[in-house]
Length: 151
Image 1 (cartoon, rainbow, N blue to C red):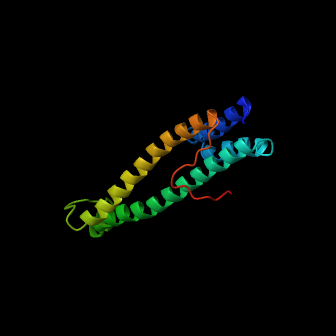
Image 2: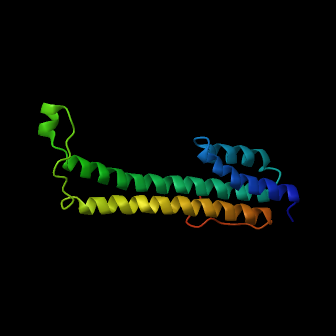
Image 3: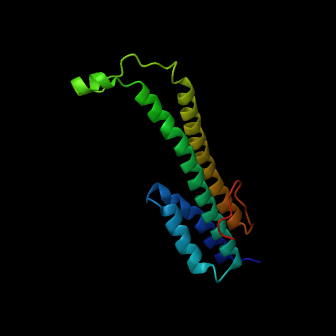
């Protein structure tokens, strides 16, 4: 049976990941600080700390994969449509005759990966809230599609 203090700390571990919107890498720093300071005192806090960190690391990996797909797609589309001859002579980037026909496949891939990233971040927001509510009720919660880095 978890104490009220353990439930609060476990919920705080999950909620501390929202610090990513204020402090860069806060979604890793603050959960690690809270988790490492209390993991030896409570198995419940230890479990929730590992879940929160595994989820944040998984989201990072998924984001990097999506970025490795979207960024080259967009850069390739832009580079295909720049007139380099006029760039050398005028020193201006000219996007005359931008041709979507040759780039529609790459643009579609880029837009779909961007859409997947936005959906993932929205899901992350709500899953963190859901996990913190579960933790405050004393229930264990496993984030979906999480890679178990910490066991």
